[in-house]
View 1 (cartoon, rainbow over the protein chains, first blue to last red):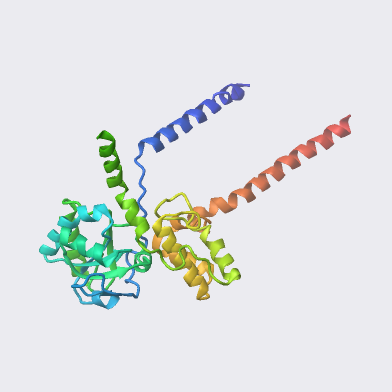
View 2 (view 1 turned 90 degrees about the vertical axis):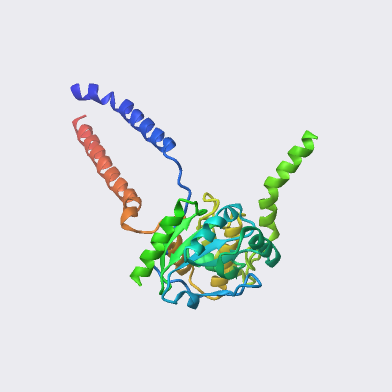
Length: 180
Length: 141
């Protein structure tokens, strides 16, 4: 009999437990990024043709130079890519080698983008089918990968590079250089 | 005047959308494979792969540009004779379990597969208890 009295409160306890769970779920900001699970693996084999007239295309072999690289996945039609251009320029200025993969881009659009926003890239590969983007687990533009001197992916930055991300990426590059 | 301003503002916001549709899609994004058997295989796989852009649709349903490119990737690999489950594992290695709608058997998912068995066993035990009691009361009556 005593047990039954206590049991009467059980649904109410469950009810408030659920309310608490829902409030927690609603308060927590949704993280819609899909991080690459390919970090730590060597870059897949690829050989992309040149996307811009004055820069070479991009191959996997170009990353096995013993020096770490930044691999920037971008497109001329992507607004955050234009927003991160000054930060990429700052990274290149600080000595980082920046290579680009242009997604679904047309040569004249890309040329205009590079004139307007600067061209920090040593090489730009043209990826019209997102073959390389999918092969490295990138789910959007812009994304920036830190690749070590052996061509192994060490870090993935999702979204545009903000001013405060520049020192962090330089640190990651340094760490990737030290490891190789 | 105001209408013109609003219209030009809307057009400015629509520019990225226009740019998205401007670029040519990957070869098999919107084209089926010639072999119906291979296309059926690709379709069966594509409805269980999650688009990483729109996130609540399969790549078969989604019209996001990256979903089209993922369809093209899947169809190209199926046409080359690759096993659908191998393609799924290839994508999971890149995007994690996030990318698959059909749950994989892993330490974290075992309750998913064990729960139906546990419920069946508990139900059988409960039913047995009930039937046994009926028989006893039946004997008494």
